[in-house]
Amino acid sequence: MEKKKRPKPNTARSAGRLAAVQGLYRIELSDARVDDVIRETMTPEAETEDGGPITESDRELMARILRGVIANQTEIDEMLGQALKGDMVPARLETLLRVLLRAGVQELAFDTSAPARVVIDEYLNVAHAFFDLSEAKLVNGVLDRLAHVHRSAELGNPAAGFGKNG
Image (cartoon, rainbow, N blue to C red; front, side, top):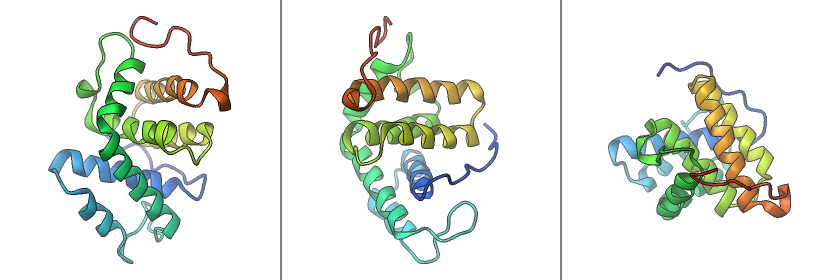
């Protein structure tokens, strides 16, 4: 996997979401403790990918996403398993793709403070920075499916065919 380009920050919260994905990746690969990852990102020296400072709201969002994914990981992976097509399962996904999807599901299903379309667009932006088009399409499809289930009042509910057989 080759890094494509840095995600462009299109909202004030982009850096927080990117930092959350990076933190989850670190936790997944090294068994780092979530509080250590958060603390390191909270230091004044911490910067965004473009070298700017991480704002307090970005830090708060990152911490909320990290803690939420850790607390809800079993449920999140079950949701991902239902949303993935065919015989795909979260455990078989590439690590960065898996943690990116977990972060998106956390925001769509458990922390509904941001509009669903914003959440999907933000994680799609991160996906485009690190993956080819096929993985970005997977991120878009999975998050869109889950958004229509968990945010049906906001988006409507065309979730027919949802799940493994859909």
